[in-house]
Image (cartoon, rainbow, N blue to C red; front, side):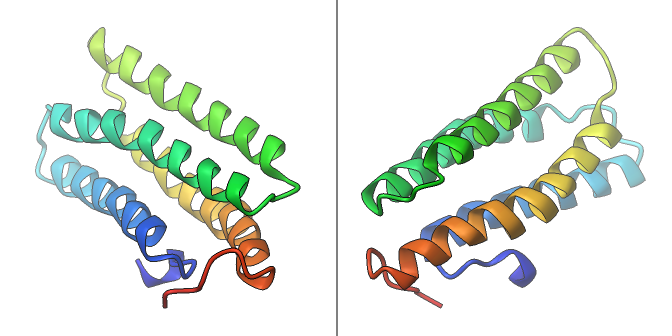
Length: 130
């Protein structure tokens, strides 16, 4: 999880929740568990709240890439809702969801979120916590 820390404690904690979901999915798949409902529920509660929080920080910082970042959030949110929809009709989405979450961390968090928060840090809008 340290690889995904961007230096803003609340956001880092929220990203750690995604890492936790990935790890839980891996264990459940390895153990042959067929129900991922608890992870799907956690993801549903987490995603929208997290994206809104990040965007509010970026708005506070007058981040010039906010609109593009919000569009990226919308695409990720739509994809997560599609996983939930497919799960609810009985599809096994566990492997695909695990890959999606990992890719989200690798690309969105390590690139987009890091760029946005570095802007906020460098311009003195927020203090780096770690």
